[in-house]
Image (cartoon, rainbow, N blue to C red):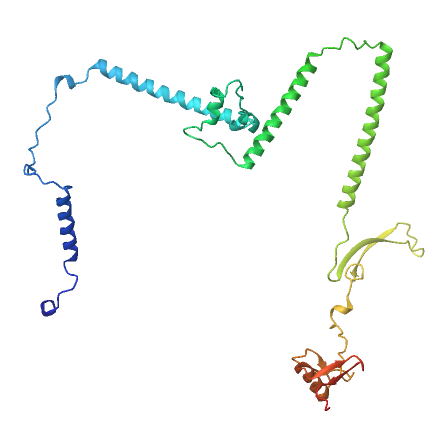
Length: 340
């Protein structure tokens, strides 16, 4: 409480209230808010029970009418849903889009204007020209994307092609023979049948040749290759060996015995080719010092050139600093600090 009583008044205290009072005063002066002396205070009225009239009561006939109306409304809704489903199916099976069926007018037909006769200079223009020159009240832009226009054109071309094919099929189905074409005799029909048989046999041979080539290609692709061995493989084999009859004992009956042996299959070059160079480090060519011609043991960091001794380093450093120049007459590098 001591802090509240001793705190200073803010500089902007009451500014918002002052602004509201000024706005209200300006409204009253401009006539926007007109106060009326006849304003009445709101008084809540007492609740009164609902009085139901005798006409409000529902009879049996009205109930039947209501039920019939509800049934009719339900039937209408089902009929609308059925029609909507049929329209959707028809739109789904349509080949050409709906917007592509109506052909747009070309620019030439839009720009064509019926010229007025030049008999009288004061003669008014024709109604067609007035209608074309007069801009519409509500201009509507009919445009679509280039992809949609291209698809519509392709669909229209496809539909025209199908119509042409259907017309050809109908014409063939009718089977009307040309009057000018003479009827073939029995010998001519047999000759035509022989020619057709020869053509069919040639086509059959070509087809059989293609089938044989395809089967041979598939057989080559499906041929199993020898598996790649990555380690030696040991095989155990057992077999029955016949024992020859002993002449001393005089037994003529042949005997048999079983023997088994292990076979070790080693790796070879065909299964696992060995690369002797894979384990060896690559041999780098020796670096030669360009100054002395000796094998280089060091690398100059600024010149990016290998060198062999201190003299070569000093020369390379002078080259980097620009203290050496190449003399074309002498075909040699030399220092630029040559005394005159």
